[in-house]
Length: 153
Picture 1 (cartoon, rainbow, N blue to C red):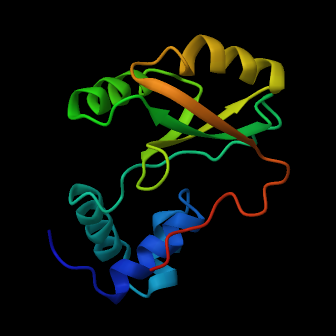
Picture 2: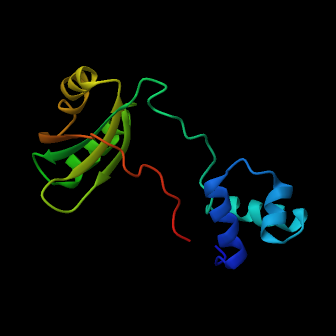
């Protein structure tokens, strides 16, 4: 993987803010020809700096306005329990993100659902039956202060 130079970082910063920017406009913003810009863009994608493109949706418009974080404590912290939990949680479409963490619990789960009743069903039908789950703590979000930020380049 080649190291990022100042121009690569500028391309990535612009794309984080507008992934649909036209190649000609991107080239103009960074001061390169469209051909050079295209070559850099293809290299950044090929080398994995750009993981993909997609649209950020408004969760409230699609009835997924209830945001919840859940601490998950496992009954054992052994490699096989971690692996079984990890594979199982990845199959839950309600789970947006899941992180193994250090501290007083094992995983932090981020989920979006229509409302508290839907969360209660998710908790009982999906999360608690997962392999190794001993205990959970739920944090319902009252206000989203900062929900998206580009990576600092």
